[in-house]
Length: 285
View 1 (tube, one colour):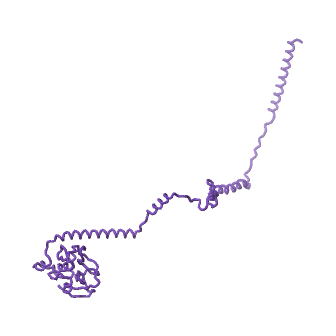
View 2 (spheres, one colour):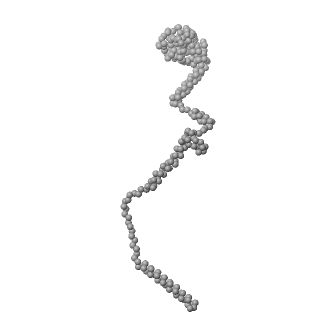
View 3 (cartoon, helix red, strand yellow):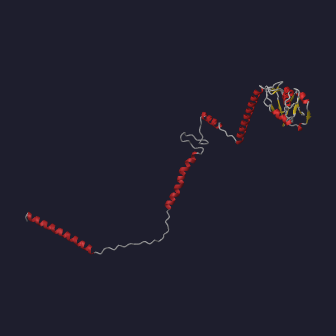
């Protein structure tokens, strides 16, 4: 057979093989087309209550995790305060309070000073301090008034006690209260030994001048003045009566007090009766 014949025979064989393959494929497709479609079946599950499944695994994990977490946070803090624990930085065992620490002496001294510098004052102490300040102010004001009065009195140019008695000037109505009111006008007059005018008094010169205002003449001597009146009980004494002691005299001011010119350097004023022995004498008008 020639080469051309061989090629023709191979081509025929290949065509026959292809035809055979196509025939088998068409046959399979035809069978699949004729086969009934498969029916889909759906299974419906009814809601049947079932007992809940216990998740023992999760519960156990939580039960173990919570104490472990607590131990992780709390135990280190608790252990830090226990005596006998070692200081990791120094390797020494802490004895006592782990919060203690050393303070420089200069700092400690400053802290003490700052603390001691603070104080609280009660309301009673505040009231007492205010009263003391008021009293001090009143005392200062009184002293200033007496000084001013004394300065004016030293320039006094009016009549003396004797000049009052020798004049024909009218005198006020006499009473012990009127006498005491007149005597009060001369508080602050400086003490002057032998003085009998508002420029300066001694004790008897003061009494002499006040009674001269009412036209009553008295000697310039304390003991003699004390003998010119009538001695009365102390319980019956009223302001305007005379307080008489050895070598001294003045006006009774009530409540155991006396209005008098007491001694050099002390202005005429009211003060306690300081004599150990004294009596009350009343001058009749």
